[in-house]
Image 1 (cartoon, rainbow, N blue to C red):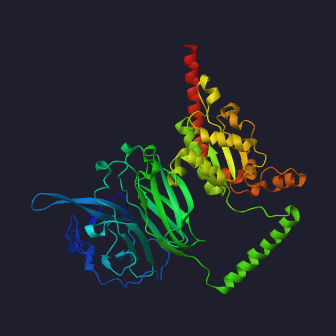
Image 2: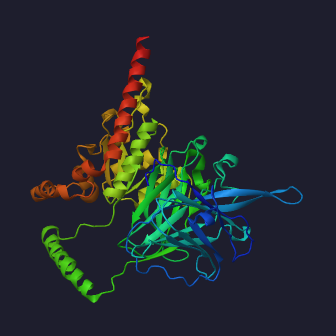
Length: 521
């Protein structure tokens, strides 16, 4: 049926018309609609079952999509006999693009056998969507939950399965209209249906919060007291979607992991705003077959041995493949300039295999929130320090272009640059809308590079420093195209950074034009 033709039943709504707040009966449901749904024959729902913990998933999957499922959290208010208002938390499941005839839903507390299930029987495809609402009892607030579904087509030749995990949020904190930015607890859920990748979703913040970025982290839980952040990204708030999403490639991972999302905002320093964290989930991508392991040994270990021997013959030591840690020093002179810094950090982390640090959001997860202490600790563990040119648009500001940067950063930088025994790689990078004067005096004598034309040289310098032999120069020109995140990757994946530079260049021109006009007046 054409999407433009209004069907008899536009939306099938499945709601919790009644529920008993017990741990094993989280919600009951019934079909309602413009027509009598059961009499119409469009849908039948088997009453809620609590003896379904033995349902089998992950079997006979045919890798087809029989519907699009989205989760969302909401609050429901009710009055008691004394007219006191109480709030309850609910989960909405919206299903669109329906191509299935039979659907099983299973709610389950993580790591328990307690389950509640629903079955939908759709006789034919005249329904645009299903909206299933379920109210949680107060006892499960904060609890780690999982939702599994299994959908079949009419002859069961196609099977679609999904597996989501989430925590039940506090009903008093999820309404942004009635909650402050610091107290807002947004709903987060993770799709772990496929071990090769996981997708996390969370709501777009309301405009009155003025949030521009989320800090997203993918964390490996080594033990209850030891964790390692594997990926960290700043995600720009979308203006077109109702939900944010991000997908992590996990096909090479094995272990326990979780995802955290926190608001990146000037009023959220020191973890003062709510951090939404997913339940811990397990990824197991270990190879089971000895034949596969043997093949890997032939394809990887032998070339690796030849590389070791070749590198030993050339350098006497192997270049490190550990991701370099680089500290960026800059000044927040314009909003568009800061977006360039954010985009550069994201590009270095995602495509260059470089752990780029900036105070504005890395200090949020540090042991100390003191800026000076954070810089001293950062200088002690980084491999390189990159001073980024930052534009200024006041004539009397030329000699103090970095006046609002923590003095400790420039003081330590100056000390390191004069220390002959210092092993840090120090460099300065000039952005397209800046010039040499936009670098602070403490970094004027450092090696200068320009972005993007010197991108390959910047990445090479961060990893290996300057090599003075003729053979090393030849090596750079022969192998620069293989550098992770280099010019080739920048042309393919660097659009978000290029766009940020264009915006900053336009704002810088506008500010200079305003300054010139003011001087003429």
